[in-house]
Length: 541
Image (tube, rainbow, N blue to C red):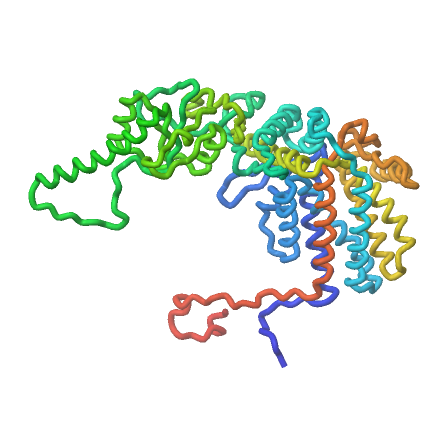
């Protein structure tokens, strides 16, 4: 007797677990070569025909089209990591893949998946404890230490050549948008640190502006294009006559009434302009349109106007200049005018006009101007810079660090392998495997720089024996052992902890799956596909 639809594909029990493990391993193998300072780039053609060149784990997996459900769930991991802490997207996939691979021999020895998961989760608690014991607090005012920290993030990226410059850009941008609000640090990079990419120039020309910049020009050629210490007024209402919401028909019997109608429209615009001119701004920026007549009145009053600006840009200008966005011109007050901008200037870069509002007193928003040879290079620099800024933000929120270069992983691995002897016999194997899996990070670092893997790893294990030298790891450039505290390779603890937690929890979840059912929904048959009422099976369907 068939209960389920015959066309449904089912994988049950051991087969489903092994297929999940194979899928996880395949995904982690895709991006394994992109870990560490000697990493390779991947070139991916997206469906639109564009090219993505990157070694950022999340960006690669975002573009890869995957059909296996377990592989899809792995790809979600790197997205979660990217959104949560911004770095470690490659490590989390490599680690999760390794946890799955090491569960395979345990499954073959008939260990129940729940037991393996219990062992993994117990090991996770101890790993986080060890991480907290290893962590070193960092002084946020020591910019040299912060620089070396962010450099360990950018050193593995495409921009490692310009590492120093990028680190300074990231630190500058985060310090600018950092606000203390009632004892809570708020760092909103997404909203208030905008990246403007302009092809051309050199990467060294990139900088963080003390203010904002956007791709607009003044609306009237006679308006001033350079104003020192401008008084800025921000609006989000139109400077045109009010149109009805829906279509309105007006029937006019004599032309006097028509002239009266036009006059009233002009009056309305004149009224709005007088309300604006009364508060003596030098610059008016609005999110909506500006009528020609309004431009004429404002140009006569020597006021520059910029129209149809994005809401997000308007919010940034408000933060940078201290202005308030006004919704109706009748409600403009003196305190709504922004006076913190030092210089307003419209300049032409390439063949487009850009408006700069710079030299602000204490801008709480900024624009990062990136220059570079081509679009692809700029996109990659923007991705890497985003990671660097996220690392700085993460440190500001939890100012503790652990040694990088596989040192923290090796220390935890040693602790867990030692600790497995004291665990209950039933979970000891899984607990030990959870420790051994962490060695994949130093091993991959060695693989990617072509070193003698077995010899160097054995030396590293010997260094860590008995819990000694917790800061020794792999120098990813040369493929030799090195003391990370001397090299200055540190990573924020929240990135490390998040990586290990996400990897273990997702591996535990995938191992618990014992049945995969695909094709539960029938595809909708198109009516037109069957011209005569021929039964489907006769059509060869």
